[in-house]
Image 1 (tube, rainbow, N blue to C red):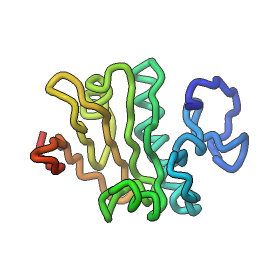
Image 2 (tube, rainbow, N blue to C red):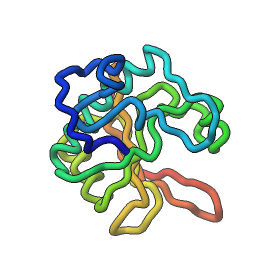
Image 3 (spheres, rainbow, N blue to C red):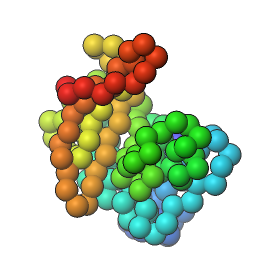
Image 4 (tube, helix red, strand yellow):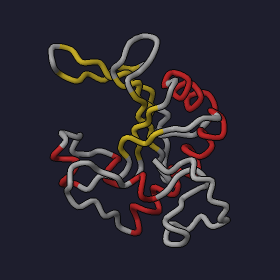
Length: 161
């Protein structure tokens, strides 16, 4: 997790200054994977990650005022398949991230009330706290879809929030 390194570079270009996408987020943390499978985004994927960071993740970090861990950002198709991700997952195009923090409910509500997004999901957990928060951002069209993921009989179910 590199979002609190405090690097003072002014560049938003991930190819410069060690892959920094913003003052608190790096390309490395948005492409990290524990699967040991290749996870190399294309330039188009990086552009989508940059948009996600610029429009959602960094403004969220500024509003929240505390570290936010990116559990999953960009995923190669092989990684997405290996972990059982949705075949059309926005993670595979760099448009989505799964987030975790001390107060996931606060993250969820800050995004919902203050930031642009395509899809926002309260992932598992309970009525007070999601286990993590999924958020996506599209440069084309943001649906503002808000869902809750519940596990029912061992199966994931997504319902409107």
